[in-house]
Length: 287
Length: 327
Image (cartoon, rainbow over all chains, first blue to last red; front, side, top):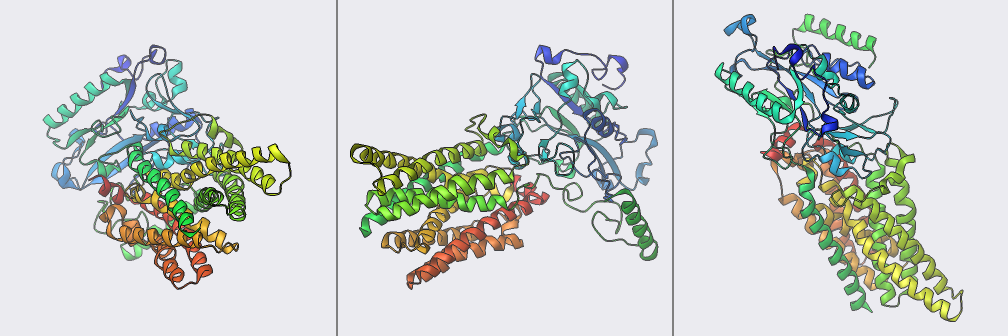
């Protein structure tokens, strides 16, 4: 956490993989400065190809959204001044601020019950020792079912002519670094510790504390985004947000699509049985 | 867009802003200030639209025909229409064991790894179940067809022929069971996703895909010259069910959550398809224009499947639909 310096969980070596400790990311936009170092570090460490040099015109965000070649995405929200105060401390212009600027580094949520993992027909997507969700690239055959099964729109199939095209890609939670006791690249490089890596239960406590701090400071719309109440049952990479989740393109009540299976299969089995009966009746009556 | 083209676009926008004070266009939202007015985060999709291409609706179409052909073959065998059973099994084998796997493999991002589909068995993944259903169907339909043909041509004498006849019955029964699942699971496949227009209609989709498969199988067999009352009855049944589904779809509206179906062009594909395989096919069949009813049904079954895929792409890219489906 902020001010802990070398004692921060973002700097320490760890043995979470060996000890089977549930880990997480806590991403706090109230200290994010929008430097995009996390995006760059992620690309460099994981050797992710470019995602197009397009100019979106959406504030300072030319990344757009998470995808096959974008595993960290810094959002630049320009919110209505009425929504709340600028988080700028002594730099704030007070009432003169034309709008409230919020930066948030988005990432794969690593759901407790993951839509992509359940949907994967090859077993390419697995749960790691630390509770994160990992795509084994050499197993993935690019069926694309995880893409429509992710309630957060994170995972995507990489198009031609990029390297390793055809497979599905998303944040690996730097599983390779974690196995060696290193901190994920994005958290390691974050200069303000807006991205904190650590034990999930510790982070949840830290997050709750930070929300309380901000609310006491007058940011009454500060809240944690961690959908534990829905069928996703919580996420390993959770966020502090100011205002509604919709403004960040986060679904307010994300659901894992497997909850729809029961009614859909019931309809399928009913149709199967009725079709056989109808066909037999057709032949019985006309013979 | 490469870097220089991007710079050029920036220059154009600056020029326009200088001259007119306002720059409309994608991602350029400066009118009246910097506050984004698009839904969600600058209108970016919340869930990812499907990456599937034209192979997938065609697979739904042929998979439906193949699966339900095996059901017709089984009934035909039971009621001693051997020629019809043979034609239906040929249809099942060609559409289900040749065309369907080819289309499915073509749609993969890495076609050479298609066998990885059979690495695991996951009952909670409709894609995994589908891969196994298609495999099981092929493993029943092809031997079933071979045994039936050998039996029909009386290639082997006596006991062996009786054995073949028995084997044909068993395999065709298996093909019929897996066939009904092959025709209906595709509705589960797209119904159990995060795409609002799909999961909101997850009970309608398997009924539609399965019944369209049954009607299409009967229609192809009729067009192949098997004009028997039983197939006509199946044609009536399928068209009547599709008519009911068309009414259901127009009644069960979910507002912004499934507006891709009711307000977007791709929704028209579904409705036009449903008109062709529903009321129009029913009417043509009622007045005895059987081949035209069959053609109308087949066209409708194909067009509505293309429509459902297209609607998924539109609905998945619409952030407001996702928000509306969760409120």
